[in-house]
Length: 82
Image 1 (cartoon, rainbow, N blue to C red):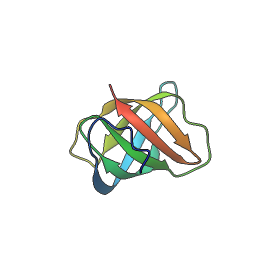
Image 2 (image 1 turned 45 degrees about the horizontal axis):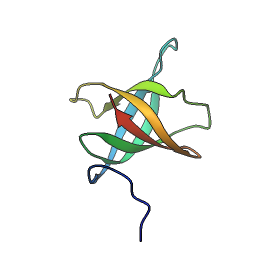
Image 3 (image 1 turned 90 degrees about the vertical axis):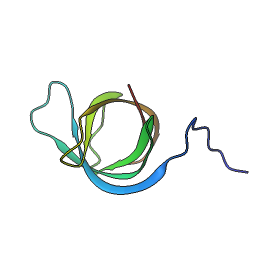
Image 4 (image 1 turned 135 degrees about the vertical axis):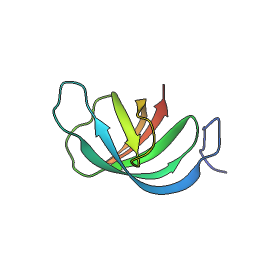
């Protein structure tokens, strides 16, 4: 049995993304492991703390999405799109 509590299945993405954190200049890189219409699993590139809410852009041609962190596991974050 798995501990998957997601409301919607995610598809493998393996894409690059970036986080824009309110009050901080510049963006932080991340790797998007999987995603769905409701959320994603990302891995940030450094150990720097990430706030509970930020804006995520996946790829160059997709619109930015506001995210809320639902789960943390080291540098990996499970996020839900607002």
